[in-house]
Amino acid sequence: MVGIDRINYYTPRTYLDMTTLAEARGVDPNKYIKGIGQEQMAVLGEHEDIITMAAEAAAPILDDKDAIDLIVFATESGVDFSKAASIYLQHLLEIPNPVRAIEMKQACYALTSGLHLATDFVKSHPGKKALVVSSDIAWYGFETAGEVTQGAGAIAIIVAENPRIARVNSGVPYTEDVPDFYRPNTSDVPIVDGKFSIDCYNKALIETFPKHTYKYVGFHMPFAKMADKANRILEEFAISDDALTCVKSYSKTIGNIYNGSLYLALIGILTHADDLSGETIGMFSYGSGSIGEFFTLDIVEGYDNYMDTDAWQTHLTSRHALDMKGYEQAMNAFMAREKMHDYAYQDRAPEQATYVLSAIRNGHREYQKR
Ligand code: COA
Image (cartoon, rainbow, N blue to C red; front, top):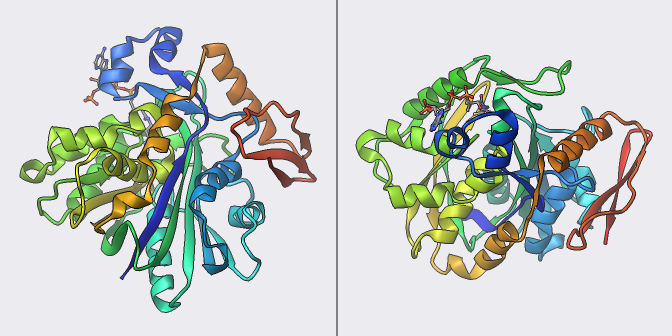
């Protein structure tokens, strides 16, 4: 049996409240809070990027570095066309050099693909483990329709034999070439037809859902209200309102973290559901472009001994709210930095930050562990 041995998430320590954004944009806050389901969204700190976020998520669960034989980094916010972000991560986390390290891309689906790849890899390499991470910055631009569906964050998963959290079962995929959301090399932000994307998402769910009743189904959430919309598609197989509240609990305050959004649903279920031992959880993954996959996880007895749900929740509640000026400064700084060939960070990172992007030299990134 192979699957999720450990799981953790990270999101930046600063956020923007949706009421603040709604007031600044002259929109009724209920549109954002009730209509789109978002109460807050994470905003990236100046000291961080996709690699530091992935390191923050992975470090607390990385207790057996010598056994890691594969690192998969899923992202649609890549920092290099050639070099895999996983190589920066391998260095920063001091994972021994005899390891494979690759980056995977397919919009928000790549983490699911990476999880299945790693599961099959561990099955064929007995005794070895894989580190599978996603890290993304969802950025659509100021005063766009997508602005309310932004966010930033990372997921880290250790895949191993005899997993302590869940067995990963292979699923049913559905691929269709559609232009609902994509980011060509010429664009700093995605080109998105949000309403069409919801239709594509729903179609992929209908094509892959096995018409079976699950107590919990994790849904990919580009915004938290998407889980309500998807659940309605399941009709008589829909999950309960209480289960849906668990599914949305992290996304509604973190926002869109692209690849990791489905796994925030899992984190929410693991945090808030009563004993899940022996339960089979449904998972619906969707990546625009598009690929949908419905698969399942079998939760292992004693799983709750291997996750720190208090730390997960404290991380959220201890974040610092930004005003509009702080949000605009942070995102302007992010956009400017991502175009810099040379950059030096003046250390103003919060004291809890362990990993910092310290410089970019000749286009190559340098990091510090504090
Ligand atoms: N009170 C309560 N609800 C309100 C409201 C109010 N005052 N005003 C509007 N609403 C509701 C609308 O009725 C609508 O509900 P519905 O979806 O159930 O019909 C919802 O709020 C959104 O309003 P809408 O006018 O459709 O919003 P929009 O045109 O600004 O677009 C998105 C919303 C989500 C489509 C847009 O933000 C987007 O494209 N985001 C990107 C999503 C993405 O990344 N997709 C790709 C990855 S899968």
